Image (cartoon, rainbow over all chains, first blue to last red; front, side, top):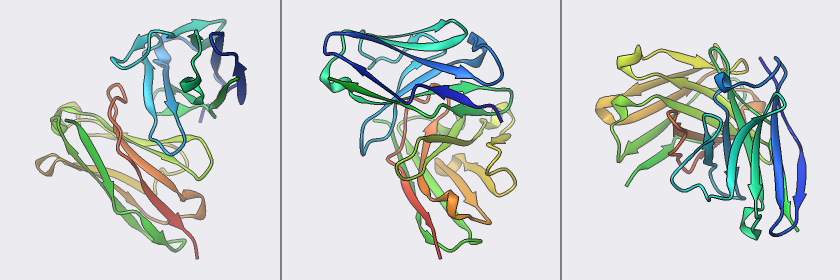
Length: 109
Length: 117
């Protein structure tokens, strides 16, 4: 089973910009991995922010964007808000399975 | 309003079995691929498996740690998704979420499964 890697933790200042990345043990992440990004706050179920690399759900704030960057999937937060402090997970698709990354704990400080 | 409500969690001994249910309302289950995701206490998300819609074959895929022990099924007439879990291990202890696979847009609140002697 493939291993999906994320930064364990990142810190961003209010109003700042931060990029979270998602790599695959099998090689470069491409659009064929259909990358997803989820946000999870304590005690809550996850919610999808980005699907299929860069598409936003109707509830996704405009300050979040998804892309492919240097062989990885990337989630960029531009203009961080205190309410963006959360755990962020990526999900990649493989031939017959999907695999979550270990998550990035984002602190807004 | 879309709702997914999991039930059936609880305490079970290692080697035991449990069946989780996910009652769906607000969308047509028969058209949807559905997924189970779990989260061990204090840990990250883990994809458990998925089931395709009947029109897409109704087939299933599973993550390696649960393959051969867990079975996902569906009863579209009852708007309900199931997860049959056999030969449970302590490492299966987690909150189990059902969600709509297409877009992962709708999630239940989760049900806690504890495997302990």
